[in-house]
Image (cartoon, rainbow, N blue to C red; front, side, top):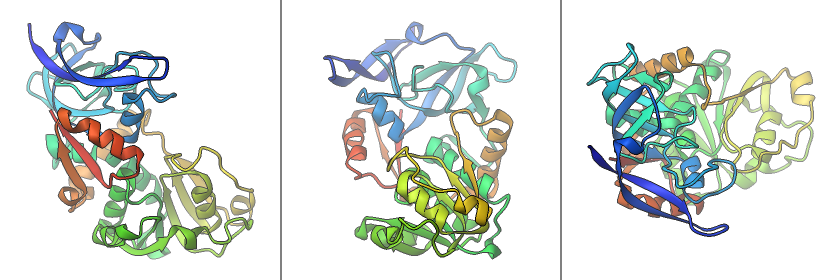
Length: 328
């Protein structure tokens, strides 16, 4: 019987959780059509929430987090996959209430599994991971309506995983990218990954209580929500497009209808968890063809399962920039 290592979070008190690396057996895995030997995963904000037992992500413990994984098929009950296939598994319920990617093996439904597209490999696909896929989905929806000639595109939360990759992809596609940050020491980092302009948080939010602001952006990719999203919408050009995918600032949206009825601004929500499979495959193929950021090595750092705890604590303190790659 094959034994392997997994990162496990356990409830040890009413509101207290501990994590450890444990030895597990294949028989411990949940039922699934495809058994995958995991090569890489990545650390996302949702993984940190799950690992520390924060409400709203995982209901039952003990639990292995990790909302994404890349690896090689060991066995499959589905004709779509065979032993030796390299695959990507992201989103759906992986790592939330189903055994996740912080494990040397996972077993999942075939519908969750994506064939590795040309141009990507096990490592680069997880340098992207769920954060990169979310960024690519946001770009996918935005560029359908906004071209590089239409004007600047704003990215909020640009030092985070989703924001960093969104900036890089947009820059690669020829867009002039404006970013917002409250971290003065990250200006050079943001310009290095493709930002044409960096606005301070204070300057961006100045006057944000007004019902409309001067139009500045042809499009927006928002990753933080709250007043940042509201301010961005108010400053979007007529017929501009705004995508939103996060709520780190707030899940409330303090906004009036003027941007929508006076400027025709479109707001598009990005749900990476349940994004349709066919479109998901298409987005991954775009990444493999020409959307893959040139600077993934620069915005990624690699840790083992043993190094996860430090990064989980750091992500809550806002001390993680770019992507954290987990090597299994």
